Image (cartoon, rainbow, N blue to C red; front, side, top):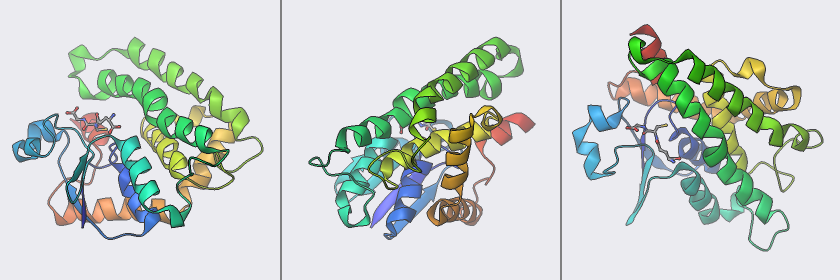
Length: 224
Ligand SMILES: N[C@@H](CCC(=O)N[C@@H](CS)C(=O)NCC(=O)O)C(=O)O
């Protein structure tokens, strides 16, 4: 059975959401964030200590967008994949990787210098600059979503999971209030998906069952 190592609302939410969309059996292991510090045993799974880590037989993957691509391709009957012969294939790959490489990166600086660093090392200017940088990167999505509900192939795909996670992280950072109308409506549509809601519930219930705090690392940093 697939095993997914996860921290609440971390990038490993992408594969968790995918697994719920695919409706395949899996085992979920929750870690206190960051596992690098809180769980030495996890370094044997991923020496970098980052989540996700997805194990599937002999396979071990640690990149969230690549895992979405892998899971979608392994289950083409679900329609979450776009085949290489399809005219939407290039858009599919582009948005799938845009979600992590282009959208999530500036948010990590907002997180680090707004919440994770101790108060004396926090940098409000960095937070505002990278918040703006992130929001400006949504420029690609706003016109795209003017006339379609999902990013490509005229259906919901793994690319929407990848970009959707970046919007989830943005909402955790309070940046969703600054979304333009089409991105805001898209974010509302994404949150209405049953698999998205199931993934939120599963991570909460599993965290509680495994003795891990169900609060996000961001919420914990705010109260520390
Ligand atoms: N590019 C990787 C990034 C993985 C990553 O940095 N994960 C974060 C959680 S969002 C993490 O585990 N951070 C803990 C650490 O850096 O020690 C991906 O998309 O999966």
